[in-house]
Image (cartoon, rainbow, N blue to C red; front, side):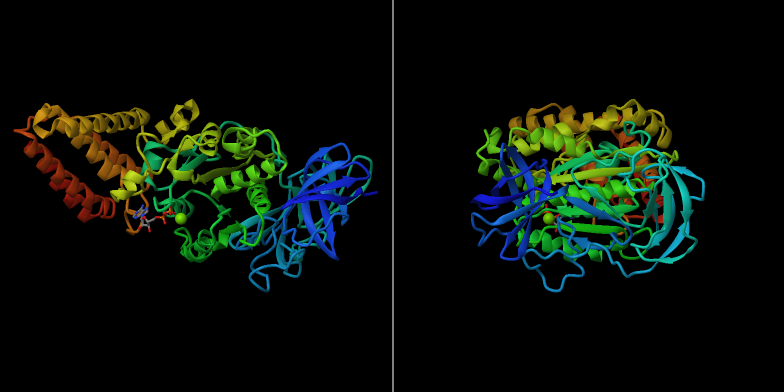
Length: 582
Ligand code: ADP
Ligand code: MG
């Protein structure tokens, strides 16, 4: 028996329903508006009143309208065909939609139920399996897509049969398993999972212990992100958020890319749909879209759907992680999601926290970030979800609650600076404010000492120190004038400029400079530090300026030349001559 109810109050998308039985937090309910079923989610229950947020416009809804509670939570449909599809927050397939917008109450199937997939069995009769164990595999594009025991299965099962290799549709039975009371269960290629619940069918989730390289020097060299790690990019408009996210998506060491676009302005969403599908996958030379899924809110959907979209994206990420794949999840922007939470909380007249955001905003954000991670699967293989969200702080104020809460949850902080963007110093990541907490993890330090070289992290810290000292010197020079400070100040300033121009600044639109492999990053940082280590004896600051400008010019040419090519070696020779002159 499902619980029924009737509408007693409506405040925009917040609807109060008097219920005649039990309802659960986050349960889905359908409200009948003259035959059209509006989907809604329970966000609060007090006594006989359920407060639900409706995922559609509530125009025309009246008190007395009937609602029916469904007994399940907002779910994602998981199966082959997700990649290269575009969804809205409720996983309506935007690619198969007829018009630009769905009619109210219209929901499309997330997956193609007619498509034939080439299935290969992995498990065999008699195997003992449990949730998330691999039964077979289909090829989704060029990626192996595992068909698993549904995550909701509890305990152990014995495999009774597995389909033989061949063509199957997603709803065909590809395996039968028997539970310990002797009951059989048919397994297809699709399963459902409530998006707000983390998928935890794995053996363990250790702290991240290796780095996800991105080819972006200011990340890899100075503030590395761990595979299965978390990071966030607060970025005012025009500071390079999109360019940086695209660079990470294209170059990051990931198998699957999930892009959650919870933009508010229509142009932000259009931007993703026009630009992202055009990106070329450097690994295959084909479209990056083949291993990407975009979850985005169309602008006709109410704020509540923004919340759904980040959870749907995370759930899809966890699904691919369970297949032993490396997933990169990008969300742009999580501020819009927080604003949706704020609107709902205000409508319910809850006691507000800072800036009228809900009191539990920090907990909501940190619980979400905590779903990222690298995991060891039951079969000993690993899978990961690395999560990077952008935040658009109002007026660039990094002290606002969403930025502050995210700072507590995310381990990497890539602050885009208006000042650097204005000076065309791209990527405009502020080298002083930004950080990676992974550089303090013994596992990561050890990993980097092996991956790059022993003493690497010391070098990184040294470079950061030089940047800080350079900034202080720059301020002194500005106050006291070129002649008013000792020579060391100029030298310190130029050493930090050298690191800025050669390591930090990187041209995302240059074929060679756009992506720097780790070996090359090591070489360049080592070379730059070698110069910074030198004691100079300049005759006045003009000489110092001229000397460093020339060195910077040569090294920039190196950045634009293929690593270790004759051209590169030519510049290196020039550089060494120049260094030895002084
Ligand atoms: P946002 O998404 O934050 O509004 P964009 O990512 O669209 O900003 O960047 C704005 C502009 O800044 C780009 O069109 C480009 O001209 C420049 N830009 C940003 N990052 C880089 C980069 N790494 N290399 C070169 N140009 C960049
Ligand atoms: Mg943008």
